[in-house]
Image (tube, rainbow, N blue to C red; front, side):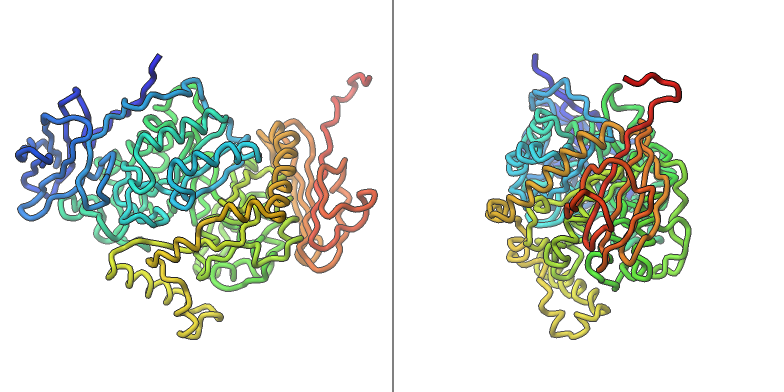
Length: 597
């Protein structure tokens, strides 16, 4: 039986019959609006209260249209479902029921089973290119693929955070049905698929909202990317709430990662969004909500969100692996092992303490949160691509130290995340890239180079000129992971290494992860920590990690059968060597008085 999905949006173009489409636009700054459908005369739209305009016009799927919001301005639909001619071109009417879904029994996976793989769709060859990689990733042990943002952005090369049309999948990557086929295929392989969404700003090119919907923005508060979005407006709230539901219901994504929510001033809306998602997605589905939040607002993790990217954990590990101490790494440079110990024991390193580079307190206490409320990583698009030269840890850290850190990442109770190419030890950079028009491209290039002037290595203006131009096509080309790397002996060895760790995780950690809580952690030497957790079934997991220069002794409570050790030690005992990791798992004790066989 044919199965389709369509989410009813209050914005945009909705097909109501094969050759009839309802158009609806919030344009409170316009006195009149008409819809201009290619090949037809303009159709005036009826004005409704509170700035809404609406009309039903004779056209069907595939029709191209714009809204005439002023005498000299025709704009794409802010809720466009497809933009075949880029951000400034006409929008296209889409029939969401055209795609015949195959995996109709899929309900997702419990959060504790997540092993996340972040991927840039353009660098992977578009929607079909990502689809072709899924079987390999599933065989490796990846259970969830997270796509970097897909909202239509200017040109064909962009990280996705410059999107301006949040309902339109990026046309350079493929069609809406190509994206649905990607999601469908992931589900066929037993994999979840998440989407990174940007609700805190619009990109610098192609955002026409201020011209006809000025109340969409505060006009006063600023974000790092411009005027703050005004989430006090009911229409603005609905625009983004419906967007989240649209991706989850119509495209069947298993979860969303909300980018930089610290830039959303109306925190209450985030809580309301989570409540809407929980109330309106089908019963029985596992739908997950992930945060990126510089504020370390643990209250949101108690209000409907599953987990947050743990930047504190990354930053402490990065300092230990590389010795870098500039920029935000300065906040972790004085006691990186101590910061890491708190991350492992409690989740965040900063829970209200002064954050030196901000000059104010940062974070909230995390008491009572499970370890799985935190997503740990060694690399992601930000932590690689926001470096001037986009270097990966494979060219920054000693190989054995990196292996030890992966032992912690993939066998700790926090949810692990990997970045594309990491699984074969890619040494290719991942740079910041765009495809803006020349004038804006020059502004972005020069601004990016100025950002690095405070770093010692780039204090010389001539050296800053070597920072790649984001707008040059070669910058994008240099960022593409190469399959040839994966096929080398070193690449195969890395993949075997990751597969071994992930098999252990799925067999021994994941089944007992629900409800796991930290039992404490402490520094045991320069660059060395020991931590332990009580797992959901009562087992005790303990990990010793030594990224320092000398062997260290571990406390007695790092005990029980050895689950994993790198480098291997004769007999499995003795001090933990430099750049080593050891993982112990003590099975739960039987209840007192229980019979033994």
